[in-house]
Length: 451
Image (cartoon, rainbow, N blue to C red; front, side, top):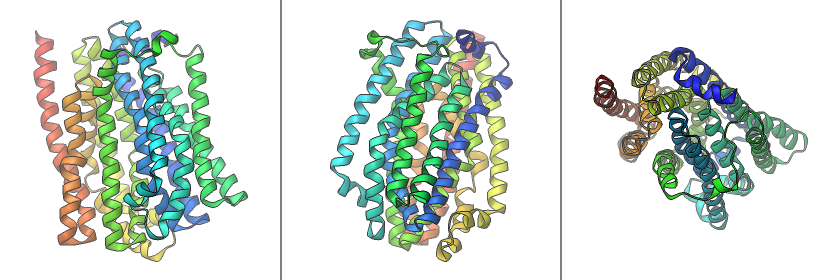
């Protein structure tokens, strides 16, 4: 049954496949995003607004380490999807084993380094003044659970590569539901404050890890690895690294962006401005969940059919994914433009934050209807195993445009310069991605198919 599921990626209609893959992915991302939102609401109301800023300081560090698992997962899953499409099961198994080995080794090293240099890292990411102490408490505890999160991110992407989106959805729901339950117990009932928030997060990662292990040991997975698959293979490691490096580079740039933004905003407006960005950052994770779901669902479809040399289906998957994503992008845009005040009120009662957040939120989401093209375009190159253009397009948005803009514009326009940098970077990166995607489709898919 499982084997038939992966083959369906090359036979079923693209529209149905995309819905089948994207809906569970969207639900999983929605639940994860709701978890982050509710977690922020709990922390803000039960501990205080400074605690929201403290968690926001820690996120880029913990997410970067966890992103090692995501990067290895996405990079390896591209190989697995194409291997299954080309009917090369041995390569798929060896790739999965190598993914696990790499994730365990790399995350362990980064966690140790992160704990040793904790007092240097937290201030560097904006954890200054009243933010430092709660950030340090949260940071040290959460870091212990990050390797489990990394392995969960790896497993989730591999599950999706097998064509099992519902199981991948459950893997995303478990840590979210667990975190909310633990939040209520540790923060509200036991009154553990930041310690409770941190242990709730770490405990939820461990629950997800147990589920991932169960899935791959059960009959649901067709990837039944043994000890021989864990030994690193040079060519596979290189391919995982080149493709996974795209995701890792993206997360590295995101972490650097957090570093700049938190420090710039702290200098411009203190703790309240950092809190404003923390709230908007949560909304970015939450509001874009259907678009991110389409992107996640698109990856195995494009990769499998590219591996099977069904180029017409690859083109159709690109067009369908972009069409669905643009429609959803417009819906998100309208909701954010109409209700930013109501959204902000859910998070905090701080008058200064309430006054500043709605206007900033409108600027940040201003280009949402078109930036979805950038997300799918860069994901396409990763799906078909072309690391260099995938890396270029991934870094274009944050690295090439956004970071220079937030370093320059605030000098002339103050805090508003930070917020207008978001839509400017989105528009410019979408133009660049659209150009390269159109060129790739015409050159590689249309010409190759005709020949």
